[in-house]
Length: 147
Image (tube, rainbow, N blue to C red):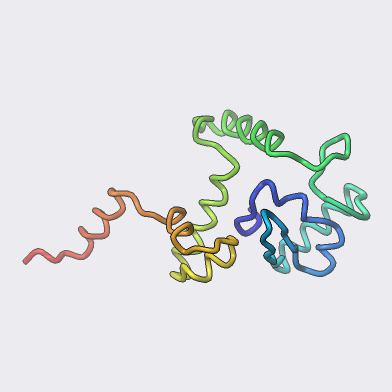
């Protein structure tokens, strides 16, 4: 999972971007920078070396076209079946939500998360980190406020 990147933004991950350690994403009139941490950069550089990719998009199909939402969706459904997970629960965007929840649980900074995800409004980001009723109940039970 590349720091909450959208599937539609994978085309911006190029061999050239790996060299600069940052990906400039332009989508719907907005521009944001996705930084590539050292360990991930190392793995991606190894991958493009093995695949003999010198320039351009690094996530491509066998025919050389950039990988699409459909390609990823199909692969995720297959992985769900192999992992005995309900395929109806496996969607590429769920990985973005997972990243958001993990980041927020560690950092507790919704403004920084909104920046990373490329949201112009924190209200959009709140959708990604909203807690369930069961989570609220567990937290309240742990508080032991009843005397």
